Image (tube, rainbow, N blue to C red):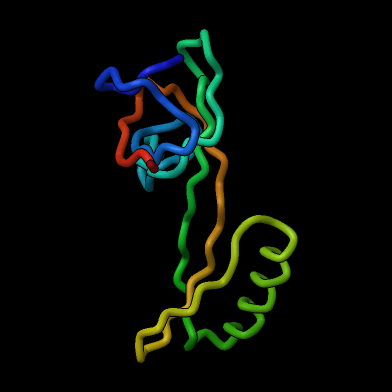
Length: 116
């Protein structure tokens, strides 16, 4: 089985952090992401993991199209992975969550947490 940067053996279900191949930061460089390891390809040095990660985008309630954006997001996310999250704060921030499947090399990631 492949191993993380520190030599720890990778296991499906691990919470991991590192850089994949496709998700980029604002400068176009590979972004540091964290998420759950959902697939391992043994006997391969590259493209040997699939990680499930999320992106949260704050929805602006002062935007005149806010209600339509929430409805649109709800329609999209009821068909695809994701959802709308409403905070419990008094300012009632609302976020759209989107799930991503990212690909990468396990050697470029580190273990953050392993469930018991």
